[in-house]
Image (tube, rainbow, N blue to C red):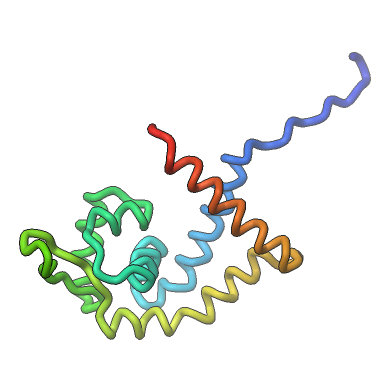
Length: 149
């Protein structure tokens, strides 16, 4: 209609999630840069903190990177003494990756700053909304992970 203002469509949720991810990654990069880490390396270390002794393939999946990128990352993090590889006692052909004490110490150094970043991200939201957001994002991830590509 002439003279009418049409409402803009809402952005796709996929777009909004990606915007949040990119903004969070940029801020996380700023936080961990002084230690010579990237946000992706930091993420891999936190995955190992929660799930010690993982294969590199599983670590790659849980860290949202390709197997090739993870192989390079493992070499870098192992070279810095933040992780170590060892044989799986139940399958000597398999190598497992785990945090070293130096890796745990590095994560401890950034724990408060990363918690502040998360608090900043959800500032203005009530605690029930933050809990709901966490549940919703987990459900979204589960829905996508369960479906074939």
